Structures are given as structure tokens and as C-alpha cells.
Image (cartoon, rainbow, N blue to C red; front, side, top):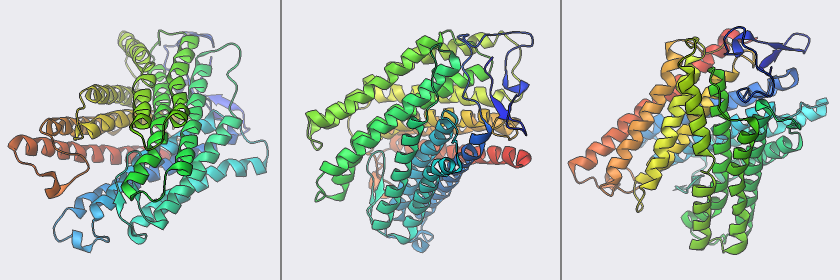
Length: 489
């Protein structure tokens, strides 16, 4: 039976009984459709996996601090003490890049580390640690550039930028680290095996995410080579990141689907799909990303056709596998209600799973209602992105014991996903409400021109939800840090 394990003192794997959610006495073979477990943690990987987790937590802490600066930058009197002429947008750029780009890549680094063969030598181990060092240095450079780099904020989609040498250099260093991470992850990927079991299907899903990330990096490089540098900064960065940014969404979606299956399994759910069907659905979720290079070959990068081809490819190609896998997970969780009560360590996992699915579905439904360039657009992608984030938060909770830490438990661990997810749900409902009145995106303060009571109420609900979500994000860091502190060796 495949279970998550941690290494013993002698380097051998020692199973944890608490990792197996099934009732005592029940036996499943390795090929059972329900045996969807994440890769085991072996001695040669644990240190590096822990380091990626620390980078992910640091990104959330930094993002939280910049979210506080967002509030201060709009507070009369206090904003005069902050650097730059429009520090609100400067703080927003760094907040988004840390909470989305750095956090996602760091968690991907953690998962891809577990799904790769351990380094066979000291030189190999040093090479595997290099992507972490580059990504960490790039993330730190982004944060510092907000205070020392200068340059206007450019609110480009996917990767907002500060148009300064310091920030561009930091993003380049981070991108180099991500490129090396993806290359090593694919080069040292663990084989799936001829007899596909649940664990093998999840490994394939992780490898598919790395393939999608490789396509995204190719798109970024292609755009960098062909986008005219004489364009205005807003147009330049928007075109530069459009193709690769869309391709990256395939990576995050695949990681989320892997997380949903693993969390349902960890809660004792029986996924009513065979591993081969799940593997096929992962292929379906991946195949749409290969439309990315076609968009570059068929249309000029600055054309409307190029832009629309990426949009439609992500909307349809990336969503085909989500519905059947989501239904399978919901059926598994529904059948789980007839079994024994959840343990204290399973309850946070269930909360993260259900909150993730709620937010992701809400974001998808909102996407169908988008018309025009208003705040319904950020409502859509906030819902989907937070759905992915909650799934990855649940995976972190799940992996803490195999990484050598204590499992999160208690009311704070159960409350955290609902506080974060509930806050974000209010946030996006407020945006949809305001979008119905035509409130424009990427503006703040007096620029929003809120004329009616409905517009003010909608944006007020958005702000309240945002504050609750910030609290939920910081509570996640507290819960994880507490679990790590109690078991840190």
C-alpha cells in the first residue's frame, strides 16, 4: 500500500499510521483506484523540500506586509512618509508577484522535488539547490526594489512590474531559477511505471505541470525576443507576459487537481475513477498548453488574434478535465460522510479542499459573465487563483508530518481555510456587484469615481472581504510556523 513516509534515522522509509485515513483492518492494493497519494519523502529530498516550503512561507509573509502597506499608502498623512510618488501601485505590484508568482513557484518546487529522483552526489545536490537560491534572491530583490529601485508601476496582467533596472534584474534572476527548476524536475522525474497506480497518476500530474511550465518559459523567451522594446512600458509588458502567463495557468491548474485528489484521499474519500482514467484526464488538462507555440507561429504577438488564441485556449483547453475530476472528488467526499468521523488532523484538510473547490468554481462562473473592462475580470481570476492557493495550502498541511513536522490541528487550522476562502468570496462578490455598475479595474481611491450607493456598497464589501482574506493568509503562516516550531529538529 502506498503511504506517505518519512525517513528513519538510518535513511529507510518509516510509514506513519496517521497518514492512512482508512478504517483499521481495511486493505487496498497498490493499484486500487482510491490510492491517490503524493510522492514519498525520502532522506535525500527532505532538506530541499523544507527549504522550498520556507521560501513559500516567506513569500506569503512578504505579501502580507505589502498588503498592509497598500492600506497605509491610501491613508492621509501616513502616505507622505512612504517612498515613491504612487506607492499604492508600487506595493500592489510586489504584493501580487509575491503572493502569486513566488508562492506558486515555491510550492511547485516543493512538489517537483518530491516527484524527482534524489541527487546521487554532493555536486548533484548543490545543483538541485541552485534554483532555490536563485528564486529566493529574485524574490528578495523584488521586495527591495520597491524601496530602492524607483521606476513607475506597470499593472500588466500575470506579472505586474516596476519599470526599473533593479526590479527587472530581480525578475530575471527569479526567472532563471524557475527555468533551472523546471529543467531539473523534468530531467530527473520519477518514472510512472507500466502498471499505473494512484500514486503514479499523481506523479504524472506533477510532471505534466512541469511540462506546462516549460512551455510557459518558452513563450516568455519567445516574446522577449520579438516584442519591440520601443513600445510604451504598459503595452510592452502586457504583450511580453500574455502568452507565457496564460500557459502558466495550465501548470497551476494541474497542481490544483493533484492537490484535490490527494486531499480527498487523505480525508478517507474513495475517488470513483481508476488511475488510468485520472492519468488520461491529466493529459487532457495538459494538451491545451501546446496551442501556445501555435499562437506565436500563426499570429504576430501584438495582434488581437494572437491575444484571443491564448485566451480561448486557456478557457476551453484548460477546463475540460476540471469538471469530471471535481465531480469525482465531490462524490468521494459525499460518500466519506457515511464513514467514521474525521480525525483532528483530517479536518483542516477537508476545510482546505472544500474551500478551494468553492472559490475555483465561483471564479469560473464569474468568468462566464464578463463583459467589458470592469472589476468582474479581477473577480474571476481572484476566485480561480485563490482556489489554487487554498488547494496548495491544504497540501502543505498534508505534507508537514512527512517533512518531519507536527500535523496542524485544532480550531485555528480548521478556521484558516474558511476565513481565507470566505474573505475572498466576499471580495469577489463585491467586485462582481461593482462591476455590474461599470466600476473600472486597476484604479483606486478617487480614480474609481463611485457615484451611487450600490457602487460604494459593492466596493465596501470587496474591502471587507479583502481584510478577512489577509487575516486568513497570515493565519496560515501562523498555523504552519507553529507546527514547524514544535517538531523542528
